[in-house]
Image (cartoon, rainbow, N blue to C red; front, side, top):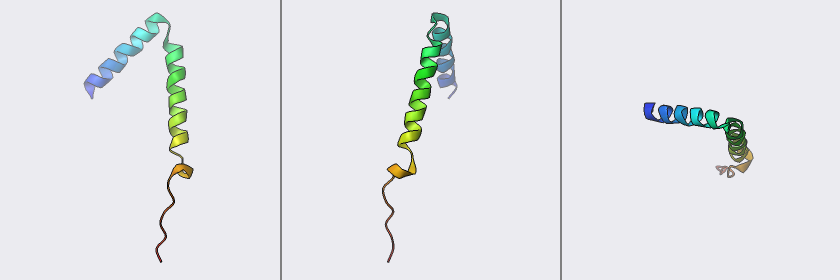
Length: 51
């Protein structure tokens, strides 16, 4: 887990230094919204009813 955090921080610093951080933040927010939309209960299969 520590290595993953180190990689994420390094990539964030690189993105900030190249001026790409706002674009990356926008893409992450879009991905989060898509994930939330796809995980809505209306997308789940219907539960089987017991007799």
